[in-house]
Structure formats: structure tokens, C-alpha cells
Length: 278
Length: 277
Image (cartoon, rainbow over all chains, first blue to last red; front, top):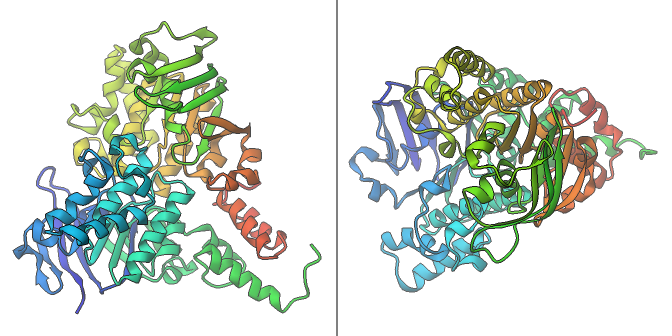
């Protein structure tokens, strides 16, 4: 049974009548790591907000573990699906970093040692342990964003949904986010993320869903979605493959969406040749 | 011309300085990129250069900020705003919150500066064109996606027609097409003599638009030089700052024992790697 199933989903915003999601079918299995990409305004955020009930379908339905989300409250869905907003300031409100991270799991009924360890491990995952007593607004924007991630991680939901988790992060921050995703994956949790960072998408996810104008136009592995024959479809939603994929294709190395896969393919090709004089 | 002379800045209530002895000149038509790790002082530099710090934010500033050679410390914020515009990372901070359509939002800034109606309309149209948001002109800014709001916010800045423009991660939420529109807009403004200071994590964008790049580390200027020099400097990677994609791939290839020319040819042929000539 799929953990999440979106069936014939349409979402029309009442104000303005914009059809932001226009017929999406998507099944995401337990433990999958799925990136959702697409141009600005293609419906990515609208789609994922249905997964925890923040938005409700105009048509179609969303099933969480086989149960129609229409019959579940946001509070009930929050036990299964944790959503981290793009803008951390939409969710941060507590007076200290620890209180902020405690709020979610406490609301789910966690207490005592279970609560303490959920909070500690979430803070450790994003490198904010030394800042436990700091006021969130004394952190810079990039660390507030990691704090928002920690506060959802601490709820230990089976599904994590991250809306543009790497924006505003420096190189190390992006690595931290990748480590969080790998860790959640290791625990068998499902991770879904929206991103415009194609390198991050290729390196941290095993499946890429491409949206255009409220619909899914491509769905497959990074090797498949960033392969030369898919570039036309990518370009139709104003996306470009990672540079490693472009170079791999130019050099006839096959699909090399990540830096590591490109370097590996180059090393393999050179292995048979005499060592370079350079 | 906008000049910072040995500027140090401490936020109100903070124990440490966020900027330390930063000197920087932004010449007419010059585009200067700023890179650095998180909390290296990049956003603070934007706030100081725009005049918001300390005028609106309080805190303590040492050193001088000069506009066209004149000390700006006596100018009130509304007087600074005529010459220097700032775009924030989060469009939610930027948008007026009072406009009911994208068109009104873009026109809001120049209207507020008391500019003649015909000129406001002309600027609004051309800014909407520059960022290709014509299809959104009658939409409510509050109901747009984050990336669309970011484009609208930047159009609003263009419509101000500032002589100096400070941009703090203007493309954080933008897709590659939106990023390119912003990049083209920056080049167009610089061509018209506007001085631009731009903070970005997307170093590939900086490589394409900047004349100069400075790297901040713990509030100090750690590197300062021609964009192609600084963006290739190995110190950047050591500092924890992302390198342009082409530079990174060449480094990885060399670390793997591959000859740099293995991918150099492919990079040169590639329009995507604007960092590499």
C-alpha cells in the first residue's frame, strides 16, 4: 500500500479562481525520497499543502495510508505528515530554540524522556544544539530555516515535506539538509521536497516529479529526468539539468546527473587509456 | 557612487560586531557581488549600505557611508531612499501589502516618490516587461507563489529607477528562467549607470553579472577582486562558500586525478556555465 496517494487532484483557489493544481495523480511509497520541481507558479506548493490538509481538494482526493484525508483533521494528519514551510518566519513563534522544537512533539502528546530525546536529536540533526537557549530571532535567516526543519523533524512523522529547504543556505547548510534527508530516509521515513536547486535534487533524491501548469509532465529517477532526451520537457517548464548532466551528455558518457556520477564515468572512461601527461 | 569607509556595525543588544572595518566602493554602473557563509555579515552589509542600519534598526555604526563622496550620516531614511533602493530576500517583507493587483504593486514605489503619473505608468510597464510578469498584472500579489512574488518585488524596485540598488538574494525563490530575467535586468540597469550590490548564494549568477566580487568572513572582507579571480580562488571553497559549477567540477576532476582538460572542453562549449571563459 502506498503511503500517499493523490488521485485526480484539482485545486482552484477561491480568491482569484486560479486553477493551481489541474489534475494530478501521484503515488508515493513508504520511504521514498521524492523531489518536486517546476517553474514558479506551477503548483508545487499548492500540491504539497494537500498532503497535511492545509489545503483541501476542489476535486479528487488525497489518501494517507489508504485513508481519505478528507475525513481527517489537520491535527490528525500532523501525526503522519510534517510540513516545513519555505519561509521559516511563518512557523516560528517560541521564545527559545528548544521551546520552538518542543512545541510540535508536545502537541502530539510526547512527554518526558521521549520528548527530550526527540528534541535533542532534532537539534543535533541540524547542528543547533549549542543554540538551544537562544531566541530564534537572534539566529540568522539560514539558521531560522534549519530551526523550522528541526521543529518538524522532532515530531517524528512518517512523512516529511520540505518546501525549498536549501534556499538561503550556504554550502554547509545544504550539506546539513542533505544529511537530514539521508538520516530520515535511513529511519524509513518518506521525504518529499520542492526545490529549484537541480544539483541538490539530483544528489539527495531517487525520484523527481516535474510539474508544469498544475500537472505532472515527467516522473522518474534523476538519471531519467535529467537525461538528454528529457531536456525538451524540462525546458518547457523553464528548468535546466544540472551542469554535470549536461557535460556527461556532451561527452557521450550517458546520464550523469550528479557530480559524483560524472567524475565516476570520466574515471571509468580514462581507466583503459594511458595515464594523461597533464 | 556609494562608498563604505572602514564600516563596523553592531546590532542593538548584540555583543559582537556583525561587520568589521569593511571598506567598499560601488562605482557608477558597477556590479559588485557579495559571497560568504551564513551569518558572515552579508545581509548586514546590505542594511548598512541602504541606510536602514542604523537609521531604522538602531545599533552602532563606526566608519562612514558616503553617497557621491558626501557623508550620508545626516540624511534621514526617506532622503536615503531616493538614491538607494534595497530588495530583501523574502518578498513578503518587500511587498506593500496594500496593492490589490500586481500592476498597482509595481507602481506603488514611484507613486510614493511623487513622480509624475505618465512617468509612473511608463516605468511600471517597462518593469513588468523586463520581468515577464505581464500575465500576472491583474492578479492579487498576496495570492501569487513565492517565486512570482519575488519577481513582482524586483519589478517594483526597477520602477523606482534607483541610482544605487542593493539586492539581498534576489533570486532565492526563483526558477532558472526567473533567475535569468533578474540577471538580464541587472545587466540592463548597470548598462544605464546604476550601481548594484548583490548578495547571492547562486554563484553562477554572480559569475555572469558581476564586475567585482567580495567575500565576507566573520564580518570582514576576506577576498576582494575581479569576479573571475575571486570566484576561482580556492580560498572560497575552504571558507565554505559554494563555487561556480564549472569551477567545482574542474576541482572534483582534478581531485580524482583526471586531467583538467577532460572536462574543460565540454565546459567551454556550454552556455550554462557562464562562469567559465
